[in-house]
Image (cartoon, rainbow, N blue to C red; front, side, top):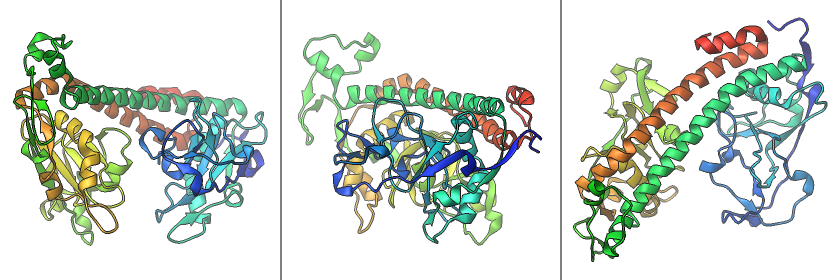
Length: 447
């Protein structure tokens, strides 16, 4: 129940939603040289915010009206959605202050606050993440297969607007939780980047071997450096470290497939078993998947072709528009048939993940299909890569395992924080939790 001093307003009373510009596709380029970036729906995280670091980014090489150049902090809203329930209609994101120039594309609404003394942009950002706002846009959208909203459908949304001081307090509470989640995400990205850089140094560029061959210090402790040879040998892929071999991913791993319980048996669904699909992998914005959109029951597991795939297996999307997207399981999960799982036969699952990341572009290139590329068992079997001996791989595994376990710990913490944030959001925006009581709920972690 909103407080008596909260004003009943229409969104259009406090903001104006502005259309973007139809940038011409012939001037788009994926070759990033520092030109302005055209913001697209695909650059949004579906829970809010941008994911430029993990999505396709396109620069614009042509002329454009200057009024469609965005400023840091500007809020954009998604105004089109291809999912039947319109889950991403109205999802907001704020333009980063990273020195790049971003452009306001069509199908995105820019939020212009009419009076900063009346409404806080920080508060409005959370209002746009409220499920009630999304429901309003879904119910008023046009289209069938593709849903569309527009400024004249967005602005009539009614809500209770707190005084400016309370708006800022609500935004601060929710923003503090979100900031910690973002910090964990960045830390995880750094940890994975470190692991992948070390993998490339050892197993792609062969830097320790080159150092030994040239009589230089490897920079590694002696007990690790001793696992690297000091000479190269010829192979079908060119010069590789002496004693290493060329082979396929399946020479050092097991390939697992999945399945789907029958959807006309409700007793197979909504259970305790996480069930990972191509959608879960594609929308995962980190290296580890720790939850899935759908779950199945033990009976569904028993009565279908799916199986439990152990934690820290590498999951690869095998078909569809997102072929080649990949992640690692953060816990034991079942899997559907749109994905493959790779499990190290050497007990080096984190190393296998780094290897698969390194060679995924080549695997997708080998894939085939009339409409979408499809990765098959043969794709893995015919792949040819440099494979290090098991004892060398285990040295790498010992180094990176703590990194990935820290990633998992950060991810688990972020999931808890997100649950608290998502539970508090509607209660704060509706006035159900008074501002003065909100901090104790965060401390307890319960609502």
